[in-house]
Image (cartoon, rainbow, N blue to C red):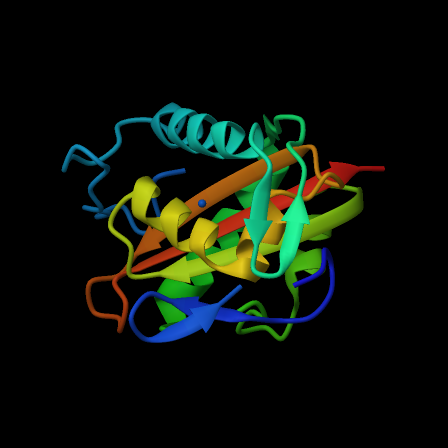
Amino acid sequence: MRVGQGRTWLAVGCLSVLLLACNADSDNDFPNENGTVPDADTDLEEAVLSRLNAFRTQPRRCGDDDFPAVAPVDWNGPLVRAAQAHSDDMARNNFLGHTGSDGLGPGHRIQAAGYRFSAWAENVAAGQETVEAAMQAWENSPSHCANLMSPNVTEVGVAVAFNRDSDFGSYWTMKLAAPQ
């Protein structure tokens, strides 16, 4: 997916699609890489920033496209809120996609969170039990990899929501953007 355009679908083992450690419900028992529930938002922030910024330090081939190494990104609260809202929506309504149950797309959710952007991209995934697994799925998908390596984005927000009664169990959203 080009930044801000089109749609793609990813769910490991099921479909191909285009990362706050809690959902809207208080009984989120989603484990982190160590098999425990993250205690604070900083656990997810540190895990994502470490993995994503390490990934961005090396040139990458995403499908047929080559990307040079790019600058690291910073964590952004409004992007986290937009990501959490979408992950919660997907978990609550048992779907995986970029268009929300309200019919709104990624750019609208970012704006609704109070973020004025000049560029944006969104990655979603479902079924992964760890930050590592979600990041690996995005790194291995050409369109998601291109979003991770975009030189046009400078900030990120990631969230996961869990619903054990849904098809996938976990729903991840990564918002990448640059402010105006």
